[in-house]
Structure formats: structure tokens, C-alpha cells
Length: 67
Image (cartoon, rainbow, N blue to C red; front, side, top):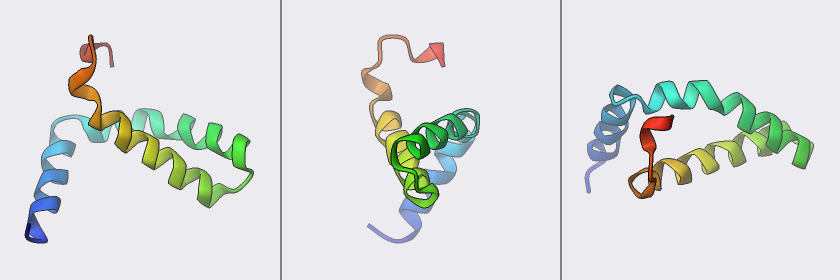
């Protein structure tokens, strides 16, 4: 895999609405993670990891249009 392939995949995902979904929900994820950890940097990392995992599971959702 070349270095350009992941960047192209990210560009495609952002164009596909994932960027909007991220912007809409990341704040709540960071706040929750901060309440659990007390560390802003760790909270941001945890929220981003959770988002990536959720996006990876979209194809298994019964109603992905509900987002």
C-alpha cells in the first residue's frame, strides 16, 4: 500500500459524509471520555478511536440512515 492510498480513502470518507458525522458527534465523545479519564489529551484519543471503530462497523448496522 502506498502512502497516497490511505489519504485518498480519508478524502473519499469525508466527501461521503463521515466528516460531517464526526463534527456532529466528536464533542460529546470527548466530553464523556474526559469525565471518565480526567485528561483532555487522552479523552480526545479515546473519542477518536471510538469513532473510527464505529465507522468501521457501519456496514453491520441495521439502520445506518438513522444517523
